Length: 383
Image (cartoon, rainbow, N blue to C red):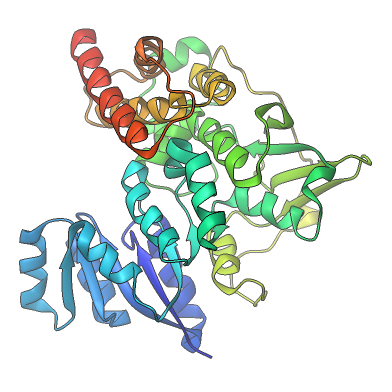
């Protein structure tokens, strides 16, 4: 039976991979809606191919340009996203909007009791406890798409959560794993964006280079699986074959392995509980010479240390960490901030923050706005 889906953030790395999966699976899925922020040319091409009923863009001017080219109904902004999300025909929403912009549409999807294939970590980092509380109250469902969270989720299926001893969150180490502290001080933008294992967008590539991405995933895993920070250990695993592991109280460790291709966890999130064949790569065990693991170097990657500290603080601290990081990453990409200054600015903002221990939604939005302004000011002073 054909299932209706919407892809929010269809022009990004996850969004385009999702549409590749949909294309391969033929008539199993009907794309009801596509949304994008600024890549209008790609969105136009996607709409021509998949013929959604709705297309949503952020800016009215972009909507005007698209409306002249497409017969599809063109929507704009948050109201447009709500119109797509609330459609009763939708069985599943792929939420691939990047950064904090995903929080509002995620909350809308939860209120509409949707099944959400979540490929965004920042929304959970900002407001994890509130989001999961709303998921339980509404009867919505979150299916993780990120390879690490999908791995944990798959290892935990049919297992009791109180039998977990530890979760091992693996990281390739990013493009700077072999660099010295001195090398990192003068690293180029080109080097930072050259991830050794995954092809990703620029923001997440920078986060992978600082290892902030793994810190955000630590917070995400805490909220998704209701775990304290002390039960999650980060391991550097350069081969990126094991995507995460779960150790149980009896000493058994379950690991999820697969080829490094995001189409694999995306497809499973779409088809769950079914597993279907695909044309992605396969793990070649006889070609593996070894699987290596090491502890992360917090001195070399202070962003990860900041994230671990924030995970133990809770409240509005994770939201502030995420907001300051987003501003710093964009400044680095715009060549307005040195790479090694990213953790320094984030730490300055965190030190000035007055944490709200049990935040309401309005506290989250206020902390996010405050942290962004503080980070902008700190960057100006640094320059």
